[in-house]
Structures are given as structure tokens and as C-alpha cells.
Length: 527
Image (tube, rainbow, N blue to C red; front, side, top):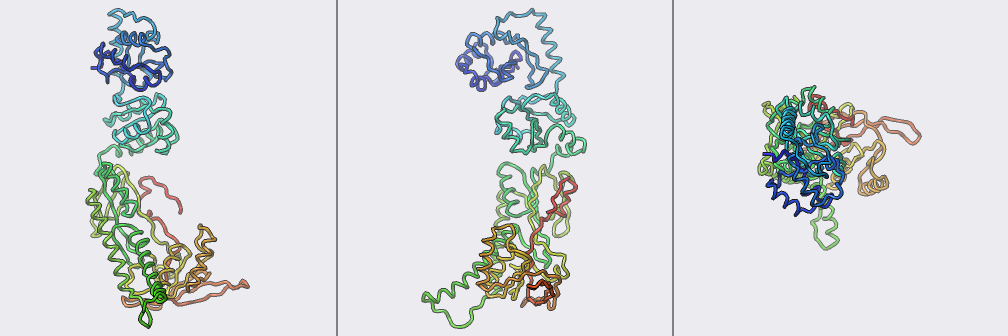
């Protein structure tokens, strides 16, 4: 029962701090009135506008509590239809009205409350940023505002059509800026639906008109669907489960132009940082053998050769152990793992296709796209048919032999470095400058260092790739590369050269073309 229908706005904490009210006095007054502590909330117009009531001493506090039955107030915080008798009642003597007047007033109050849209009793005034965001995660619908807005009633009526209760919270002035920065929204009020900030009133109405709000409010299979099983996707999936969410992680690797695929873990683990560092270490060990002779190590005479097959197997075995470890981690964390390719077929629905062609539907409240990048190939005749990329290099069944690295990116230079280190003939084809976007003084130093170690650099543009011999498991093939080179006098001529392997490393593109993002209204940048 709401004692005397009094709503006291966290008097023992907020207002006590504002005006220094003696808590002991308040506790004694509560005891004499036999009102439960959590039910006692002071709600006066001056207090609501956060203007201190000066001279609020013990006598006035007791007078205020004595006239509690004379003050009526709606249970709804922040509404403009709150009824409150003149403030003079707090400061002046509290003469009770007649019984008939009180009955009339109570009847009007009951009619007013019955016509109001429901707001949760959890609504608060002056909440901190942490409290607001925590409530946003716990409540299905939360409306956060700094100043009262008459559209709040319209919002509650809108959600009532879906049998949803709107929880409201009044945000303190100090917390407004922090909350807006976190959610990435310019102004209050803001609305959270199942933990997501959907914007303000205008955006909510647009969601309702498009039908997205109805789908948003439905129950789905998962709280979060992570599309992509790389470093970012795996970390996000495990963290979401730690925070109490039900998560599915979907990962599928489309074969490269040479048909290469790999396991869970993404680019870094399978075809990037990890295998590159291992092969770079193999190259360094080869150099250490030469250095060891100077420090007394007796090395057998003759050529020292690398067994590519053994190196490749060692690298792939290490990667396989990491793949298995990630699978185990997902199972231990209770993340549902699906080795299936996902595309959006609705605002909260994915169509997922497994390797065997089985198609399933997966629904979720939220989606995280972490699909990563794949190597880019130029629109040059023969490029797709003849060239490999870093997706293929680390699992080649044969030593690449004489290699042309097309591009001046760090991927191209790293691969050229370890290939030269294991004894291969390596050329880097540069269109203009090395490491565009990086410090050019360092870029020139890298070029000088690599040149001193036998890597060749040529500045030209390939116009055609021609396969002369197909590779086998026992050895590489042969490719003729046609380029246009410009002489010092400005004349241009076509030059051809043959290589065992051509590695394309001119950049990488996001794998978002086939996700169906247009269905969910996601706009993509051109690059």
C-alpha cells in the first residue's frame, strides 16, 4: 500500500546531500508516522526543479510530514499531470480540509491515475550514467530523459500496443554528456529497446512505421549472433557470454582463388601473423647457421638447404593446434559454434548454409559483423588464374622457388623477406612508393636493408600474366609476366620475365558483399 500516496524522491540520499538534512531527524519522523523507509519519498515542486529549500529545519520537516495526508501526488515520476497542493503547505501551518473536500480530491486523483499510461516504479530522478546503462541492459524498454517531454506519454501508448511496459529514468545533468558519448547520440531523450539505443522519438516512430520495432520486440534464439570467427569475433563472443548473454558464432571460409581453406581463428592465426612469424623464424635460423661458424660451431661442408615440406607441415600443425584450442574455448564458454556461411534475410534473421549445403534460420537480438578482409586481385588478364596470395602461400605443397611479389604493402615485403631468407630468388614489383601511408624515411631504410640482402625491386606495372607450366605437389610451375617499364628518357616498352610463383599483395577488401546488408539498411563505404 502506498502510504498517503506520497512519492518521496530519495530523500535520505539525494536531498540530504543537497541541503544537509539531519538523517536522524528523518528516521525519527518516519518511525513516528509508521511509514516504511523505502516508501517515504518527498516530492515538492521546488525539490523536483532541484532548487534547495532553504531553512529546512526540524520543525518544518515535522510539519511537512504531519501534512502528508493533505498532499497528493501521482506515482508517475516526471509527468506534467502530477497534482501537488501549493508549496505554502510545506512552510505554513497545515490545516486539514473538510472530509468532503478530501473525498472529492481522492476521487479526482483516482480518475487521473486510471487514465495514465503505466510507468515502472523503478523510474528514478537524477540517475548516474552507470545506473542508467545498467537499467538499459536489465529492462526490455527504458526511456532516459533529462527534462520532461510531453511525448513521453505518446511513447508509452505506442509500446502499450505491444503489451510492453516503459521504464523511465531521469538522468542527472552531470551524467547526460557521458551517456550520449557512450551511445553515440546527440541529445536526450533516448530510448533503449532490449539494451540497444534506438535513438529518440523520431527514430522510434520510424522503426514502428517500418515494422522493425515489432520484430525487435520478438523473442529470438540468441541475444547475440557473431558473424566471423577471427580474433575480434571470438573475443566478442566469449566476452558476451561472460556478461550473461546467449551467443552463437558463425564462421565459414570461402576458398581462395587456388582453393585454399582453413579453420577457426581468422586471418592472423591461419594465413597471417602466426604462419608468417614461424616462416620468418625459419629464415633467421638459416642465417644463424652461418653466424655459428664464426663462434666455433663446426658445420658440415656443402650447401645448406631448407626442406619446404617439413617447414610447411610444422607451421600447419601449429595452426591446427590453435584451431582446436579455439573450438574448445567456445565450448567451455557455452558459445554455440556453427561452421556455416551467414547472410541476412531479415532485420533479426540470418540464413546460414553449412559445407554440406544444409540451410538453417538463426534469429538474434543483436549482430556483430567481424568477417575480416581477403586479398584483392587486379583486373589484369591472367591474374586470378596464375597468381596466388598470402591465403595460399603458407600451405603450398611445394617451395615457391623464384617468386615475384606484386605490391609494396607490408604483406608483400614481409613475404619477400622470409622467402629470400630461406634461399629463394625474390623480386618486388612496385608501382610507385613503398609502404604508402607509413613514414617514408623508414620505408626507404627498409628498402635499402632488403636490397643489401639480395631482394630486387622493380618499378613497373604488370599488364598480363601467362601460365607456361602448371604446378604440382612436387614443384612449382612457370608464369610469364608482361610489364610496361619506363626508361630514363621517358620511353615505355613491354618487358617480360618468367617466375615460378607470383604472389599478389596489392591490398585487401572487406568480405561484406554477400552478407545481405542492404536488407537491414546498412550502408557501406566504397573502400
